[in-house]
Amino acid sequence: MERAAIPRKVAMSISGHETEHVYRRYDIVAERDLSDASTRMDQFFASMQEQSEKKAEKASANSLGTLSGTPENSASTEMRESAPAEDPKLKL
Image (cartoon, rainbow, N blue to C red; front, side, top):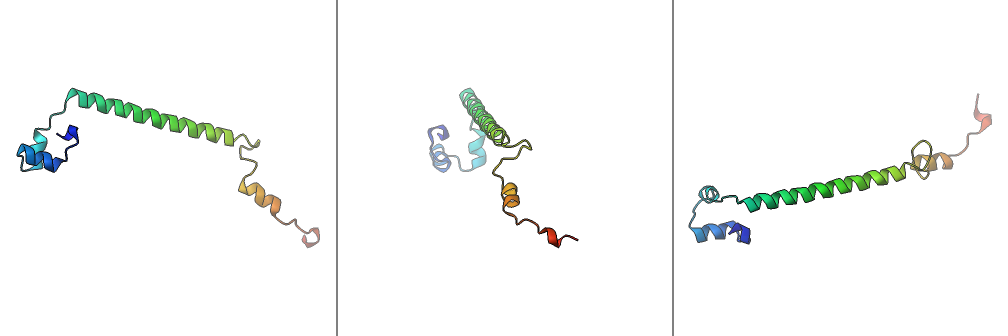
């Protein structure tokens, strides 16, 4: 019944099980359930691998901005460029 998306409480009422403990005891796992779970896990891990590769490609593309490996438009570069120049008269 759970495979048919019937809520557990309704399935327990239909089957006459008064406790979840007894209901779960008779919830036998079929080979198809295991196969479906394996397929879903494979799909999940493949999508995680794909996301990881995309992030790595993006990070690699971003690190090609300068020789130091930081993007040319980084905040530190902008701060250095916008900082006021030191007045040579103030140096001791």
